Each structure stands twice: as C-alpha cells, then as structure tokens.
Length: 252
Image (cartoon, rainbow, N blue to C red; front, side):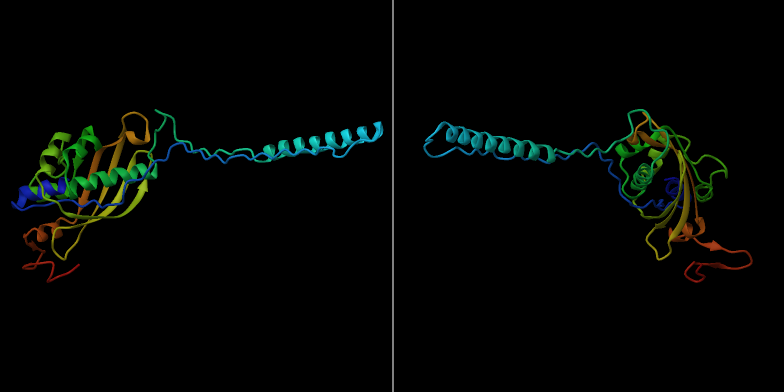
C-alpha cells in the first residue's frame, strides 16, 4: 500500500498498510434437488371355486375385474402425489453486473489487504485495474513527497513499491459504505508496537466484463495517523510548544 512505501523512503525503516481479513464470499450457482416418486403395487383377485352355473361364473368374473380396476387406480394415484421438486438459485447473467454487491466489495477489500499482509504479484495483477492509482497525503508526508500528489501513479509503481515491503498486521474495522462502484472502510494497522495506527480508505472499483468476478480496484484514497506510524517505526513526534515525546508518554 502507499503508506508502506512512503514510510520506507522517509525513515529507511519498513512501513506498511493494514487491510484486514474478512474472507472472500462464494457465489452459489444453480442447484437442484430431486425427490424420487413412488408408485403403488398392483394386486388382482381371482375368482376361486368351481362354477356350478352360468350366473356363478359371471359373478366370479365381475369380482376379478373390479379388483384389477382398484389396483390400477391405486398405482396411478400414488405416482401423481409424489411428483419431483426442483429448487433453483439464479445468478446475474454474463455482462449484466453494473454495481458492487456486498460480497464483491468485501472480496476486493480482502484482496487489497492481502497485498499488505502477504504481498503476491499475481494477486496484484489480478485485483488492480490497468489504470490503478493510489493517493495518500499521509504517505506523502512520511515519504517527503509533495502533498496532494498521487502517491502511486500507476499499477507498476504500486507493485514495485509495495512488493518490497515486509508484511504488517492489519484489521478491517468496518465497511461503512458500499455504493455502486465505491467502498469506504476503516482499519487498524499493527507495526509491532502497542500503538495501533487507525486509518480510512475510499476505494473505487471498475468491472472488466460485467460479472461478479470481474471487479477490480481502479483508485484508492487512503489517510491514516501518520504521527503514530512515524513513532511505531522509530521516529519521534514534536508537538507544538513541547519537547519531543513518544506516544507511550502521551497516549491518545
């Protein structure tokens, strides 16, 4: 992240930016569950005994026909009442996603956090848009860059700067706002001391192909407590009208 690169240039010590680990969300596809149907069992009754007359034979035939009819009806009824069911989960059609969902926003934050806690260039290539930029006056101040300047003006600049930084502790406190293509989130960073650095980021996303998996980070704006960061990496902080003191002496 920007903070890290800036800090390293300013102090010769390692700095980093914390973006915490919610984990990535799954997007379920189509599922169907079928329940088997069960039919009845046919039975038939045969007339028994010896017919002693024409009327007795006729009566036996009628009894057999009636039993067969009842058996057939039972089987059909059983089959009808046990019809199979299907449950369907739908996902947006390819190329129709235009706004971030909550899982997609969380995934982007997690992926960006991983670049600060365990940098991987393949992840950076996948999650950062080709026109990615990162701006932070907190980092600019620590690194001696002009305030208001774009800290990392390109994807390559971020990969080069962040890729050389050691891992830091990072925890996302909350995703406070998710708009169509924008996410605001607060975080804390742990650089190895008892003093946590608090910060807030505003992230702008773009979509490669209109799918849930097509979101990338286009722009990042990040600000944090650079005084605490400076103290955590071995620097000092002189407050107006006072002598130099550490945060431990004057906790916030």
